[in-house]
Length: 174
Image 1 (cartoon, helix red, strand yellow):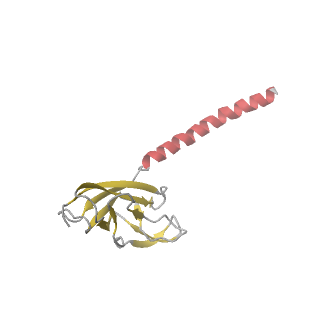
Image 2 (cartoon, one colour; image 1 turned 135 degrees about the vertical axis):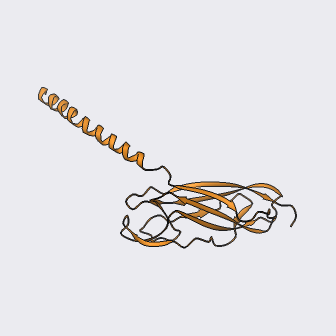
Image 3 (cartoon, one colour; image 1 turned 60 degrees about the horizontal axis):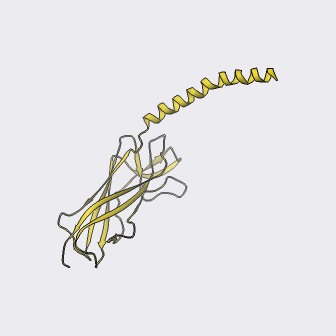
């Protein structure tokens, strides 16, 4: 039994520094990876307030840090997670048609071993929206959710969901 205890202590003394080095290296690597290399914003396309029952467009923009890319809304099933944009229920706004996406770059993606569609630097999506006919005039919160994945040439972050809010003034009258 004493031999096993000595061996056990010896292994612990040898393994502990190695484990600590791995933890320190992992922390150093994690510091180089931004928490979120995509910054999202939401704005109205027009300046005059829309009325109840009318249609308007909102612009959803992604600012992409250098070296990173954002995947488009169209991807292979076995590839990266595509960008998904949704307007949640329980508000006076709803999608009024197909979301307009910018033309993506199509190129070989070393992370997946085949061509993917993505954006670099920035991307702006136009959201056609409709206001409920019975919406009262005044300020209302437009909520939009975006689920996306972002990668560099060698590293992918897990898919992430962000929620954006924009106050929209609904004008009186029809």
